[in-house]
Length: 142
Image (tube, rainbow, N blue to C red; front, top):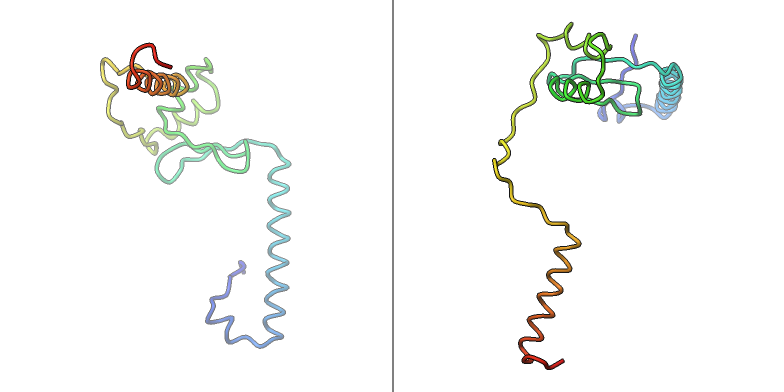
């Protein structure tokens, strides 16, 4: 039978001996899960699955999965020039009907405003402040 956590109400009804037994059970389950996790991490294998929201999650790269939508994976795979028979491309083809497409955000403006480096903006603000102070004192006065 799988391990079941007790509710607060169930724990409140326990005798001290039952609580001790429950604590020992929790510790044993914790050790079992740690060993299971250790074995999983040592195998160093990658695995994929379709995430709940339709993205593709790759497990085994770190402590958390890497999840991207189909279009994001394709863009990344195209960027690294991954072959058509790469495991992720094959997974995408095999699970096409289960995959979601990344929701589109607002399209970028055709003429986006130029971005200014924050350091340059800070220098410009300081220069404007100094220039404003110099003009307030009058020309040529320091």
